[in-house]
Image (cartoon, rainbow, N blue to C red):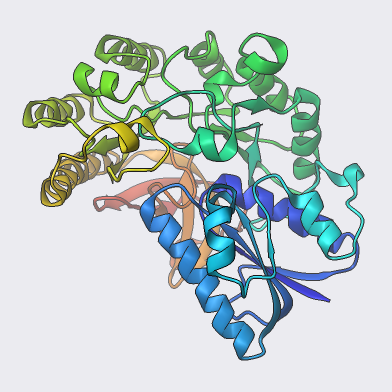
Length: 431
């Protein structure tokens, strides 16, 4: 039997696909993740149901698979993941060509449907699909926040922390496979442990991860601003294995909008948190995301956000435009009153500002030296990242092959020679 898996959506979905991959291969099943051409007995599509574009991509992928099934490239189609969890009752009668439907956290059911026995002994094992030197490490499922625009709690359920022992076992397994960088992911890192241990346990978790032999970089993604874990910034400051990098989705700065979004904090708390990070870790890279065009966002609200970004100068920044989601407070109760062209205009203005900020920061790094890890080779360059950059979403450092010998997955020292808006160029420092 051959089983192909197509993974859509976020890094949390990727971890689920990798765990399914591990279960199947442990029983001798031939499997491929995201093959360039599908040709399998069973195709499993791990869908995303977060925003409109992602939902459309998932549905289109299913429809393309149906065509491949008609052409004899696939015998069966399985659909799993967030989109199915949310819309199974609507999709199943509309797309009868799909042979089986599975929501989130239903890997045991998928394995059983293939007449295999789920193996709990390898629950914390994974066959990673990322480059061998880094891997995502999921510490929890779901979210207990009640942001008015977000459907994740309805899809993934309330926050459920994984046992720390299981996370450490998985991290140790990854380190023995050669993983040097672990990227902690969750819908809400800040909440980790509160449901299981009745207090935030992110700081002890990160401290224990740093003790694992072989792990050199620990990177933190998606820490919620409210109730930010006490002691985390101090730990980052004192422990060199923890990258000076924080992914904190602030979403907005206007108190009016933060209240409308039901974020649970205001501008004052946001600025105090950023000030603490910058005062204790002056070189910290803060990645954030903002949502523009939410119902009720006025020109004054957006201008306040624009000025905040101009003054704060985030190292990394992404922007989304609002689209109403059924089952959310904003989608069900508030009129989508910001015209689409205004949303796009606000998106463009914010991204143009960030492009300028990024270019200025990058140019300021010319002549500086950094430790980088080499991810891959692309054309005439080694492609590396510093401890201030996460894979796929952040800046890359391009090093000419003519600069010297470098190895994928190894750390090297480089000197920045030039910069563009979002990437840096460097030469290897020979030792």
